Image (cartoon, rainbow, N blue to C red):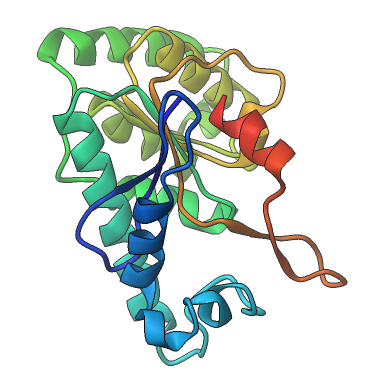
Length: 222
C-alpha cells in the first residue's frame, strides 16, 4: 500500500508512506505546511484542537461544504485519470454522502454497454419493491447516478438499494463509491484506492469529534 495526503486547499498529493512502508517525513512536512504555514506552530494547533468537524462558524458553512465537494471532485478526477479506480471515498457525515455523489455530476465513467447492464440489474432488483416504494425519491434519483459509474452507500438506503450497489461495485460497474465506514465491515469490496474526506469523526455528544484510530484506518484502507 501507498499512503498519500491531500491537503485541503492544496494543489497536489504527498506520498507519506511508500509501498516499502517507509515514512516520507519530507513529504509529510510539505503536506502539513500546505494546510498552514510552518510559522503557525507546525500547523498542529489548527488541526488537532478543533472541536468541530467542519470549517467552524455558521456563516461559512455553505461555502465550506461547497469547497469540500470541490476537493472531493479534484481527487476523484485525479484517481480516475491515473486509472487507480475503482475507488471508495469514506465520508463520516451520512448527510453529506449523497450530496458529494451528486457533486461528481461532471464525471461519466461508464460506456453505453455498462450503462445498459446497470439498467438491467437495477430494474430487476427493484421489481421486488411495491409500486409505491419504486417511486420513492431515493429510488428514482439513484439510477442516473449509478449509470455514470458513481454510487453511494449508507444506512439510510433501502436494503435492496444497498444490495444492488454492492453488486454493481463488485462487478466493476461502479468506479467511485462514496460510503460511510460501515461499508468496510463484513463486506468484500475490492478496490484500488481509498479516500478519507476527513481524519476526524463525530463520536457522540460526550466525546465530540475525535481522530480516527489506527485500527479504523487499517480496517477501511484495506
